[in-house]
Image (cartoon, rainbow, N blue to C red):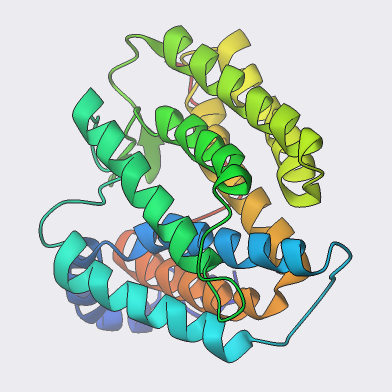
Length: 269
């Protein structure tokens, strides 16, 4: 990370700006900025699904980027002023009960449908949306294990490992089912991205209670789907990268760690 090289944790400049970023980071946490990754990806999944129905071979298509960004902006306003203040989109921050899981799936369906609707098609493609909902539920089950940061050590840990095999088994089953349906529907994004992400709940199931496997199973499936969506809607890279690097920079100056990150913590529980 370039910022870490320019501002080492032991430097005076780092310590000078740290209070500012701490306040900014507290506002970021209360606003739930990091949950926008999943929020936006669901919307763009609907947009790309609609592109697939209009042109099976669409690739790296910048057309419609203004409408896509407008959809993300409108949805973000709803998120910041309604969903987040009322704790209605809290993925990863706590363990959800069955009703909360069901509610998140309903919201996910609304988000995908919202992205899927266009001037050419006012009715969502419900059959095409179904495997994406299964994939979302698969990822949601992995997020039933909230991670906490040890600020002194700068590492993440999880203290509650009950029902690990159950959740990973269900997650694995759902993502495999979504891939099968994606293949049947001839959806290259769902079938390919889903097939890549099968490995993460599988590894978590074989080697449970390892923080590093849980970190990978939480971050990489979402990242994989987002990147595959960008193959068809490259404009999505812009808000993704902006959010990613802004959060990383703020967290570095707050805690001295690089987060979100592709790295994992090799702690054995």
